[in-house]
Image 1 (cartoon, rainbow over the protein chains, first blue to last red):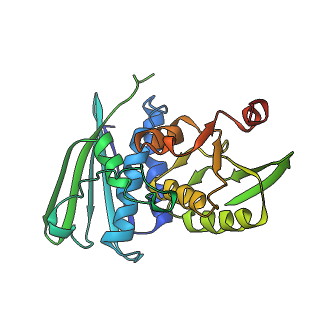
Image 2: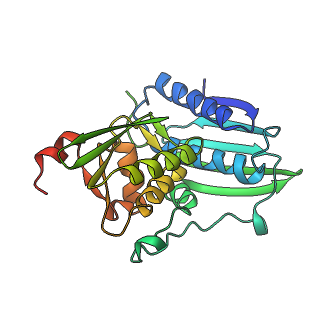
Length: 142
Length: 111
């Protein structure tokens, strides 16, 4: 087995199910210590539910993970709205040297995704969003 | 998700009884924190000892909870798991909160 694949409805509960599936697949490969992958996938999948499908539960999300030697290679496809300007958010953090009431409560997601992934690519084709990236492993398998 | 409150001297510990603070519980978390903030005084410590994972929504909800407090009160955090700590450090939000190793460490530390 080289990978994990599943396609689910666009609901938070189904997203959690996808994360559980990847977690189990990693554990089966001696990689239960890996943690960054979950930060990345939770952000990307939540974004699809909230922004691509605008919280509609009738969309589909297809996740495919290939467990390579040094990294997980991920492809996610959905039929929701395209990214604005067909480009991925830059994910820059804003200054925290501000008054308490001006501290940011959001805008962290794409920073986390970009920080923890490599080869991040987005393509819009056939009325679908195709997002792919690699998440390097943090530990050796055991 | 639930939050259990416990007071010890002038410190209120709010222990999050959930393993994740993520998009699906962020609003409920904020509502609970709003209530506890209004009903308590003095030091407030959010015990995240049981929480294995937060996403950016969870992080935002914790920041929002802090912003609900008046200027003379701050929100302290305790018991961050490695993954939760990583999210705080990567976003530099660890500089915004006073962070303790555990709820027990809060009692042992000088003010």
